[in-house]
Length: 146
Image 1 (tube, rainbow, N blue to C red):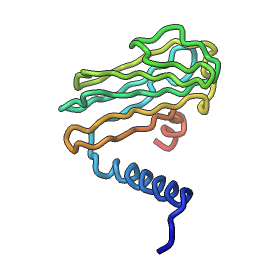
Image 2: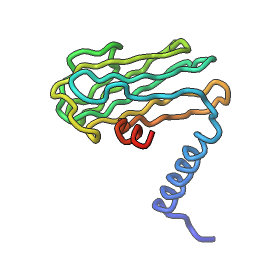
Image 3: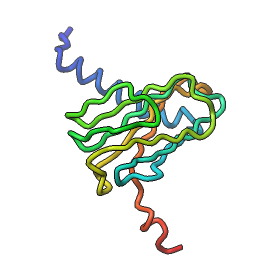
Image 4: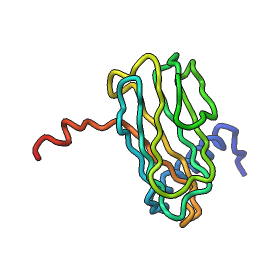
């Protein structure tokens, strides 16, 4: 019998994790959605739609420019790594409906690639963990051809 080495076990573990997370969106079937309302400037606004039944907790991660200062936030920030530009909010007992979040930052976000986020939650209906990526959309391009 051949002995399995540490590298092979790590590779198998990574592949297993990727397979699990790749299957989550297909299984989740959730109505949670998230989008930026204002992805540029000093005031960044985004919206999360929480379904009924609502998840027990929602983890929101925002990636902004490294070194940015968060001047204020509509919800208390759980963790902010200023060197990396990663802010996190852990919200518990979130009611269903529309959750709007705002943060005031400096320097301002000037272009599309300077911000993105993720919403991680447990889908109550399927008892699975799911995530939604948030990236600013190009409204002008979306409206062309209408």
